[in-house]
Length: 256
Image (cartoon, rainbow, N blue to C red; front, top):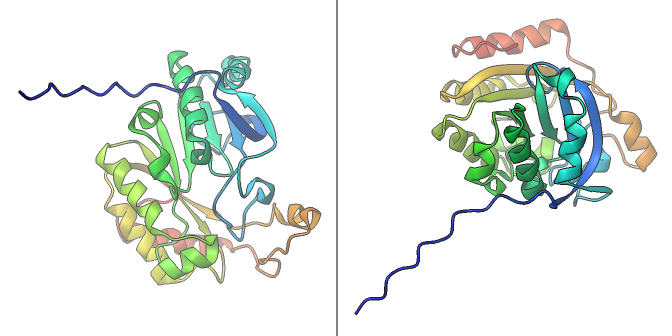
């Protein structure tokens, strides 16, 4: 006689006692999703992007710790300011602490707060279906379409980002794609066209942003005793940014 199979328990949401490691906070951010946003930057990232703004957030999560309950209580203090925006969790790479992100987002959604996940997608397999269900918008950084350029730029492989992008498309999760234009690094026409062509094949992308390279993080490298590899790289001109956007337009993608 066959034994009845056990029905697996439904996945549980991490509790508000889940601990995360916070890098920094921006209480009224205007560039990490729609409207004014409370932006929670988490510590920890497996990438080593040459233009990283927060090199002190690289590696394993560390530094200031707080529970998801403490984090959401802080967010609630700014509800009147972010009511037309919401909460963005960035990094570092927030999916290094996926359970903490899920716990905070789940509480935020219960409060009617819009949630945005800012990620490279490299460790997208750490995002459970339940976490993504509590995520209203994903900001996905596609740093290159060429695997060699991607590895040179980030120190890791490209495929995880592409796989995560396709997963978001399958579940029709609203996504903004962001591409950083770095002269001499990511600005090759074939590389840009590859990102544009890939993005054009996704049905869930609501917005594409071309972000001009800048050196805001360079001083942090000096303080950390780290070499800044792009010290001689110039910021792209307006004409170079327009050229990049034109390549996206060739594939029917309007880039901002």
